Length: 293
Image 1: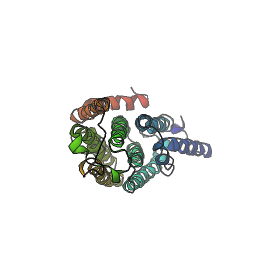
Image 2 (image 1 turned 135 degrees about the vertical axis):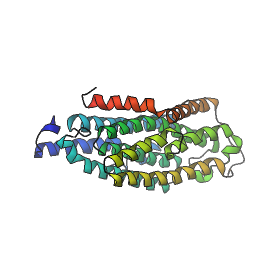
Image 3 (image 1 turned 180 degrees about the vertical axis):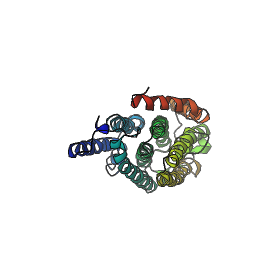
């Protein structure tokens, strides 16, 4: 493996090419601009699938390459040389994309920026260069798949009710569709890292492992991005559900949409209340990636 070989120009070029291609696939900064510009053009169900799987599969491929080939997470010299670069990419992605979300009013664009910001958290966990960091990245990836898909489903139902993707034209849903407003609050709170939902543990594991790996600065960036996420998503829910409606008539939310959101919200709650089983699975996955399973 390249991880155990002396550094060379060939290995550096290989690492740069692989990292660049997989960063583009994952939407990591500075190659992230294509994603917010494309998600809003897809139908809601397609966007929900993409939000749950597309960037996560790209990151999983990046995780495989970095851990298996370059030895990130198992103390190999090749991996140790890459971790500062990975940390910088993670910090840039988290801050840029949360800031981008704060500047949008289109629901799909807001959520698309958050899709990329969450990949930044996964990259931060990988950049720690420890097995527990890889475990935290896998845990975060599973949590994010569930929450991001649920958020896009919710945004699609809000658009159906208010006839607009623009938050400035939405509102009043909590009074007309209180069950939907409650179900939509679950992924909103989870993405924000509020307990007792899965997002709290996902962010806590990344920050905890950053402190254990003597990379407190990266944990601080993750914490700052988390606080900005709370501002962004609380504004999203308030504008979409709590404020007075601009329209006198609203379409009802279909029961099939409520069922889909209820299932995903239940998964978020279960992980939040019992995170240890998913952490154990993530630990096993990390060991298998290192060839020690």
